[in-house]
Image 1: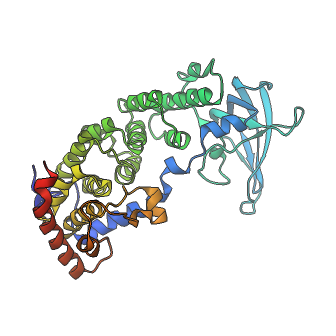
Image 2: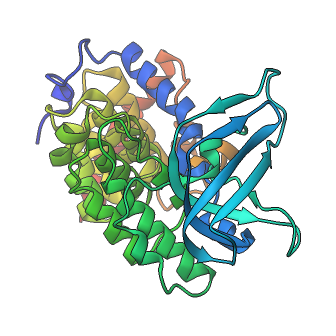
Image 3: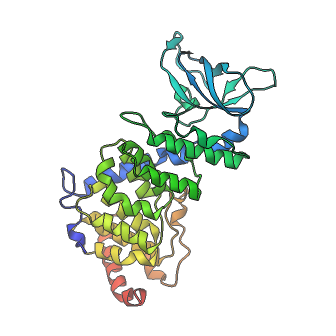
Length: 387
């Protein structure tokens, strides 16, 4: 095992891992976690239930204004509903944008559209499909870069089955993206959806030639606490490190990955100790380990108490303190509500453990005293905990 005092040394960073540099990473991730797309997307099943028609089609030109967008949609494939091959759409934005003259945009876009109309003979409108901006045309459609996945949508019955078929088609389409094309629409579409078929398709993205598609697959799997994803991250990182989606991979590892299996804990420890991994990935693995609050994480957390790095030492103490006081596993939802600080206690908790509970924001003097307490606590309890 690599000594905790040597963790992150030799990592791909240009500065030493100090409290300042660690805090900058933590602040960046803590602020940006609110923008992680898996939590902000519009569920596909909701769209399927709301739409009167679902089609694959293309738009070659559109007229955008402060109040809305108008275009003709050429229908290629009707997934559900009944409508002609050419549909006129006049869509009003949810709120008016900046004043300005209407602008014609001659940029083709092919994708999956969810259409709605108020009556059987009324005009068609398009439902907003993606939570990427109130007045963005790209928020109205899921792009389909290729045609290989289209056949997988045929024959689906019922909202749940059709929703999964659509998700599988979008995941397969992500693998066909190339160059600067963003496959991030998959994260928008997935939301919290999960199934064996979806997991299998996402694992398939890890073999994509595009680092961007690979990053999307890795992010989605880590959000779902998939053990195979965290086990593969160290070997897959070089091929996705330069992709914009690598930031979301780190966010997902830090804030969402919470598997408690021995295999997952071992993979996290390996990531935290690998000097070949960038500091951000290592720090995210440490954050995950300190947030899980299970007995299996304690040996690693205890090793951090001997670190010369004050940020590592604090992380170890926080994780052990949370375990001893019976705190719930930390997640984005209970962090937002602060419920992660509601600790009902455990068989190890007493007045001393509660008095020495600590978290980010304590003074250096408080941290040092409490870190010493948790080091002593571990020495007294490790025999019983490791049996």
